[in-house]
Length: 245
Image (cartoon, rainbow, N blue to C red):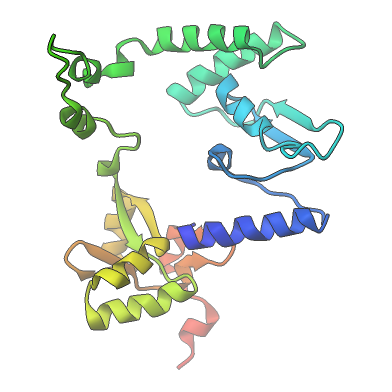
């Protein structure tokens, strides 16, 4: 989903919860990153203790119930290899050995000690800590450290402006007026980032086009679903309305 779509979905969820309507939300782990939602029950696939704690923070968040309920389950599919699987396996072992007090300070200390030990040199593979070390005169290489640090490797993704609600009208304005600053600020709410190989494939198919150098827009409207967001696999699937002249 683009930013405008996420905001609308979250507002709808909050309103349904406020109105006490039956509401089931299936989300990626991004909902744990500061999204202020309050559910009576939360189901979380097995993960690291940090992710479990964040998911639990969406259960009875406002303290309106005497007690909320958080269920951690083992998913039928394999957890992706790498950091996520390592964190989940440590979490599985620690949880299975303790039936109460799962989110205590001692448990987190043990969790992060084991996780950081497994990560080893990968924790600082760009040697950022050396840039943040004092040279004896309290001079630090903050700029160099900032250039190296990437929470998300943006080299693996490319942005595209999507046709979601007002975004479609703004794209038409972009094609006519060019990348005016005020217009580009509005369009930021209608951007999704695609893996490079998907982005290239859709460009080759004509499903997205380069409206201006480095600015790509969605050309085929059916790819953006009002509930699911951007669906790259629909680039070559035509809706009935698309075949009517």
